[in-house]
Image (cartoon, rainbow, N blue to C red):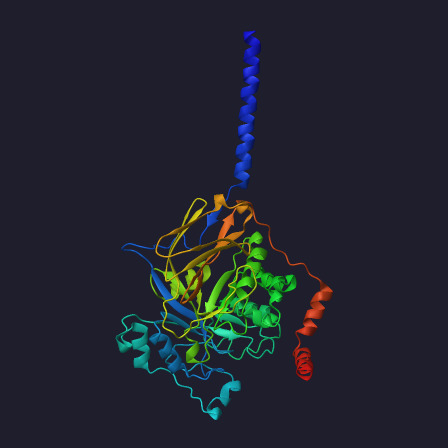
Amino acid sequence: MKNIKKVFALILTTLIVLQIGVFAVSAAETDYTIVSPYEDVIWEGDNAWGAYKGTLHTHSTFSDADVDLATMIKEYYAQDYDFVAQADHGVTGVEWNRAPRFPALYLYQPIIGNKYTVLTDEEFEGITSGTYNDRGAGMTCVIGANELNNMTLTKSHVNGYFLPEGVGTGFAGFENGYEFAVKFTEKNGGISHINHPGDLFETNANPEAVNDPENIEFVADIILRYDSCYGTEVFNEDNGTTGYDRIYWDNLLMYTLPFGKTVLGYSNTDAHSTDKVDSSFMTFMMEENNVANIKKTMMNGAFFSTTRNLRGNDFEIGPKEGFDCGNQGLPYPMFTNIKVDGHKITVEAENSDNLQWIANGKVIMNTAIADAPVTLDLDTIEGAEDFLYVRAELLGEGGMTISQALVIDNGEEKPDYEKEIDTLKEFIFAIKSSRLWVIFQELIRLIKD
């Protein structure tokens, strides 16, 4: 009898051990890690990093703006920007006290009464050191930026950065030609991002174009194939011509993350006049405000994107009511801490009334936020293990500020991305990207209108 009991006990113990083992394997397979681009940021204490406000996309009379370079730079400085990259159309930026080489196309500017004025050497020294008008903090000059594809009727614009002087100047580009500009930038040692994609897809006239699989694949394919292309603008100026790029960004993330690449969401003034300097911009978290750290942050995503203007929309993430709070001197919403602890993300913020979390393009949490920290516990959210990412949005009287995506990593190896070649589709695209075809289409549109 004792032997029989021992056998049953042994069998029972073995089954329990096996069940625990199977359970543990199952739990491990569904477990995940939250990978935050802000992981290394030191938020407080003696070694706390700075929060530096800047734009990587602005213009002057050296291309098609109405304001000369000196006036534009002084306006950014007066509005407490910490860094600026001059990215005129087809013009590779240089130091603000020098005139860049620019295409003959822009020789019309003096004819219509505009000037080509740069900073004096003394002004440049004062602005970059912070002694000009006793501001106390210098504004970093980021050279080598260029908004490429400047001669296209389709708005397939790409910002290339850290290009050698003169390289890219006069780059006319190709219609529908994001890839040409990205490839050109990579070949010349630079990095890039896609500009205002909704402008190319004409999403203002057709908001649902942000959900069109062909439109999503078109940009995602480029970002996946070129390591030097880090993302896309989600806010641009007052978002007047491209109001739904934030929704499009979610779709890009869901396309690229299964292949292991995050799409960063940039926000730029794209200012052609001084009244747009207070429109859309970024806050970089950096140990020190210098070009090396700016480039590093552009690539690692330790920054936040802010806009003063956003149209209302019927997409799930909203907002239902738009807002326009530029040039009112209002403090803008800002994250003061993002901390990950296991499956929990805790956010601290200032100048904010509302916080919402987005995962896979859907709202998973919406709550009031003031001075107290707010924690998102993904263990309380059904299906969280299937999320590809989560990101946070702050809304306040002074606008909207959004975080980059915090990636959900389940530990699985990511497949290599390979583009499927459809010869017929590529041929049709080449025809539709020809300048003659685009001009013909524009003429037809004008006749219809």
